[in-house]
Image (cartoon, rainbow, N blue to C red):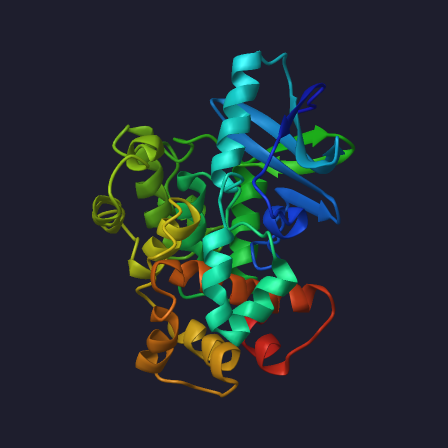
Length: 320
């Protein structure tokens, strides 16, 4: 699908603002639904039944840092529609987030303070809808990062839509309900294993109208947690990531997988394996900002890797 129409709008983020560290996360899936070069990320978006291409640039207008968002489409889009894309972008990437109190709080910990100095102005956020994030969460279960990336690429290549815009060819997620008439074996043939059943069931939940992301945003964190945990194939590890990335709860940090235990042990204490209680004692001292604090520390190591700094223990565990 060639996207021959485009419209540009401006977003004024709260300050301080780190453009690259907000719109590009080196730890996120390296799939072919987005591309990044310093100062300019491109991505696809399935929004209100349209397949879109998005391009972000940092603009300086009258001395103000602004995000220039260009929306590419295969038809003319109304002003109201562009405003809806803009509002969703602001929400997903936390462009209105006030970080000042968190930064004052961070001075109590040297590791967090160093991470913030390196990434000051970075926002937590994710480009995906709840539906897409759930699919990714299912694919991540019991698999290395490399294997998870391959599974998601297989699904996107088979069922996604190739979009051409701004000199790029990227894949866009399939429509919700795509797996209504697809058997489990067809998905298993794409090497997703037992996850095929979970993917189909999640797809059915959304297409049947039993799960609505925008309704969930209005509920309390406890209600969100209860509903998400009731979904087939979704466990605590996926849920607390969802509560942070999709629903923006900075205080929720309740689960540490064995893989994360090894990484956090090195990140926080520089040793091979700290106990889970030791890790939680360190994390819990950040109070209402505990997940946001861990996010900054975590992203520091991924940005170090992206910029060429290699930690042997890190490479051993991420296996990319």
